[in-house]
Length: 291
Image (cartoon, rainbow, N blue to C red; front, side, top):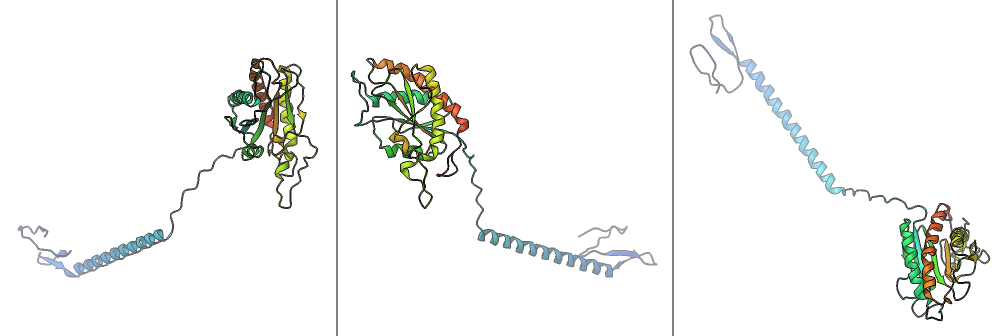
């Protein structure tokens, strides 16, 4: 109810919008036609609002049904950076378990010595930023195939098998790589290289790696050769990665401490040689390709 001022304080009860004009006698009269028009406009406005609200409800219901029918998209899996180049070194302490390897007159056992050597080589490699895994860490004797499988399961790896010779000039160190002869990388009909010649595509890389290490060993240990030697080392043949064998001479020393004193220098030469070799580490594009 709205109060309308008519001068006398009279009150008008309103239920719709009215307009008024003065008649010739000065009295108010109400224009009911205008009131009717306004009322119709209000009804139409309410109807339009109602239609809009109904459409909005239909759209919301449709969106909800669509969302329920469609599975929620999972966020994309994080992309791990691709590892490229040389990342891993597999160290293989030779022998172990029931196979002690070469034995010296003073009770020296090759299998024990190479574990100590492996510890020092590992420290030098890790200090140089390389990741290292071992084929054995205690007195086990993994098979040749198990040792190779450890290396072959890695990407961006090299393989180093460590030995102490039974003879040779004491205080010298030799690096061995597989020969090219008999290592032709012939794949079978399915394109898979035979396990027995897994080293074939890597012979050239192995020689580069071996020469880098042997050159440093020759500088430190008098009487050692300047380049890697070629030999059919069983452990290298089935390894699908650049692979070398490092052999210290020898268990024939009168005092084990002579070999112990060699170990830090051998470890340093392997780590520095691997760092020098690293830029050359480009893997064959397939099993039948020469790097």
